[in-house]
Length: 73
Image 1 (spheres, rainbow, N blue to C red):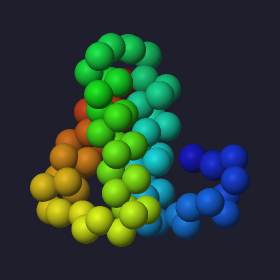
Image 2: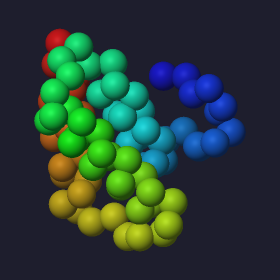
Image 3: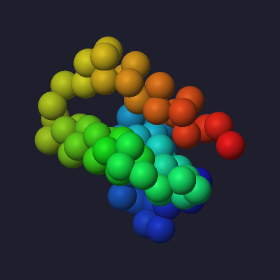
Image 4: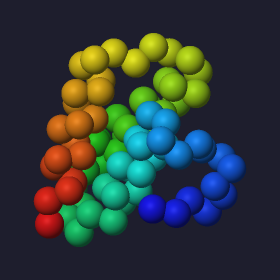
């Protein structure tokens, strides 16, 4: 996925992957409270990363579950 400004986030970083997940969610055909809550969770994690808050294994596992959930079509 191409970013509008490629200099904002380095590709391959956790932050870039979370942003790509957020963009994937925004294109999800079903809008619901659950999708909104998942997007909010991802946004909060991106903010945490930018503020140098440590990312735990549990956070990464949850992000992985979201990838699987929003990869289905």
